Image 1 (cartoon, rainbow, N blue to C red):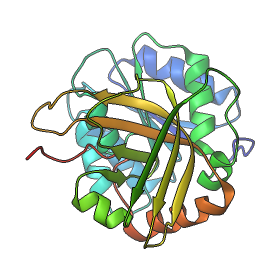
Image 2 (cartoon, one colour):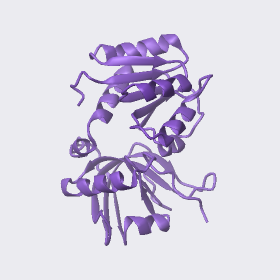
Image 3 (cartoon, helix red, strand yellow):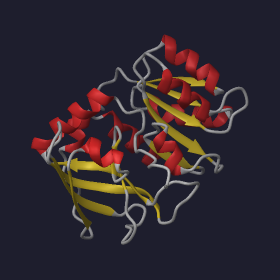
Image 4 (cartoon, helix red, strand yellow):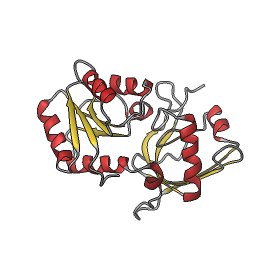
Length: 250
């Protein structure tokens, strides 16, 4: 899909110079770009245009990025990939991913990395998950058995989003950006097993804001026979979160 020129990027920022700079990066690929100075303008453009990716600042007068994402997740139309760029800590990484944001960049950012990330998220999920990660340090091994995904969610152990999962841990926490090799088995349900490699997007080692401890992991690779079941689960439940936030501690 990334070779297709029929792609539209919407850049949302109240700084005109930054909007132009980001837009130019994608126009050089032959892609179409639209621009908005706040979240409300952006929402109106998304309703009337086929937008593939939204790159949005968070703090903007006239409608911020968080408000935009919240409105998109309640919309009835197809929601584009959303990336946040911000120079402020207006929202935690956990909260952003739980709202459905696919990636977060802090200002200043590397424009080449931004373009590479956008290309990555335009690849269809099953194709994206079929690529074995490049060799590097040995990933942390995580193995669990559950009755079903639904039962694991009820017991606050595990929950799946559109792009990965939350897993409750109380010790041996991997670090943010670590790779993990996961192996989950489920006795019942659409997904019988889930084996692959993921990247840790965030780690919560103590109860914070009432939320239980655990990690948020993005899927990088899923073994071929299982990715179909994962997609079926996602398409059936249509989770809004890219990575779930986790449950309130008892």
